[in-house]
View (cartoon, rainbow, N blue to C red):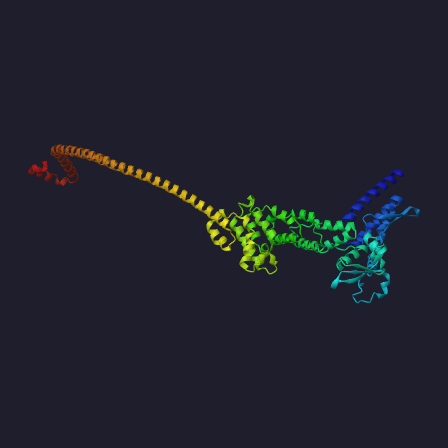
Length: 542
């Protein structure tokens, strides 16, 4: 019996493990099945403690008539009640009615509780609040009610303000928070009251500022982690908003290192569609006083020339501050970019930037109006003149310098003399090369002419030789022809002499054969032919 009980206990443990695995994989929307699994698990414990196998069947039978639970815990607590029987306990928030009831009551502590809202429905509940926070300044100023103990237990600064010796604690009803917006205060109040507010890129810097000022360390660290997890290449809009918030809260110096690390992940080569936003980020970094914009430009390592041109001629490039534009032009003059972009393209981009700066009404007059000059051409020249040291005009195309650089009138006399000297040296070099090429061409022509004369001379000699050879061949041909004619005449004469005798013999033979054939075919004419042969012996011989 003891062995049988041990086997049953081991089987119950195995069944419990299976049920626990099935509980994790179960669909949470089917509350009836979850309740059945919960009751079955409960009765497994009951069976292991009491040894009653029938309790499983009792649980399976009674589960259909029991009220559905809306949720079940992954790890259930077991309370041992008298008699060795075990019953599972359920957290109160598993019943939604209880959770909704508590949440509604807590929310009523701060919903519609602003004294400036004009809502008097909760005037009877004002006695539940013991402090009024004056949040914000100017038109955004508002009064928000709160419970000082809930603020004090989360922040040592609030504790000193509300219960300590600080100036705010001297007032029993009002606490001024001028450097906090209403949205940030409501977020903190939700957090202090036990709710779960949402951190977004719009409130994260305000939360960091509040966490840093009021010594809420977990909030401060969470805000920093949230910003550090942002992918700048994918969420440029959010990053731009965060930079604006850093500038508003004057936190740029504190976040300098973090922003620098985030900018190192930006890759312009795979973000051609975000070039405008990339330039906006650089401009914002410069406005915030963050030095990471300079390192970002220096380490771009653009691989394609088309990307350089898109950066230089984008609409956002002409809106960059002078320092950022200078850094771009200086970086593109590095040896790395020599094969990707030429100086003529950089000069055109510089002139376009200067024109846009002078045309922009928002540009500070100090950028264009230098030394009190009001003439627009002078302003333009002053802007472009600062970029002249980055260019080597002597290596530029002479025609480009004449058409695009000289009209701007930013070159000094020294620059012009240097350019003309370089161009004259270049022209002299070109002329020397042309003279050498001409001499080589002339020498080559003379060589070809001598070769042509030799060829003509050889041709004439070959013609003479050919003519003499043709004469010899013609004489030989005539000799052979005469000999052949003589031989033919001799052969003809010999044939003429031998022809009569052979022709008579042949004619006689043919006549005799014909007469014989005729006699055979016409026997009646034999007497006639015989008489004819005797009467005409000469014809017969012929």
